[in-house]
Length: 234
Image 1 (spheres, rainbow, N blue to C red):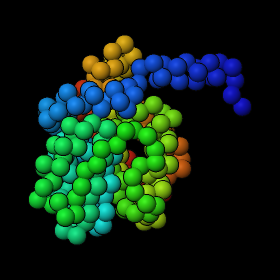
Image 2: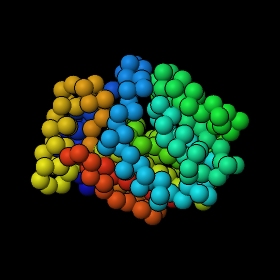
Image 3: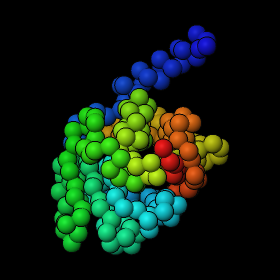
Image 4: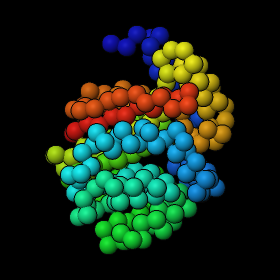
């Protein structure tokens, strides 16, 4: 049973999200402008992404779906280092500019790798049980909680029974400087979400809600930030 105070807090959070979170169209326009400059985020992203792929059994992947392919830097790394030569890759993004950059980077693998623009609506492209890795890095921190849960339902649909959900996201710090940084980041997101790329710290494990079998979870520090890594099975 939800008590009135909890209900008011839930309504306040939902209202704040609806005001602050970028729409898919706004996010697409923002990242169209960012373009290749997004690659500078490697400074704080790469350590976490390496840990994610190391725990996602990529060496046995047959088909990867990436939500938010960005500039294609991660896709290129997967295809050159992590997945078998037979593995297929599909990336989607709400930014046409990002899709264009990914396609250029994936030209050497064009027979088994593709990037597709999407408008942020569901369902995601692809038949049921068609991939065995659903990968998304620094996208769930762009989404409202309800939208994130809807995307998780789509991930479950796309994944084969032996597939893995592979996520990385900004997450709140629990104490000390990381807690101060995440509170300041969230406050800035509430007032000017585009300044922080539309992202704010979120709890991935909470979004999964106990409906996934989590095989790995870790927190990676990154320049005052905290990044949550989750690998889970349907």
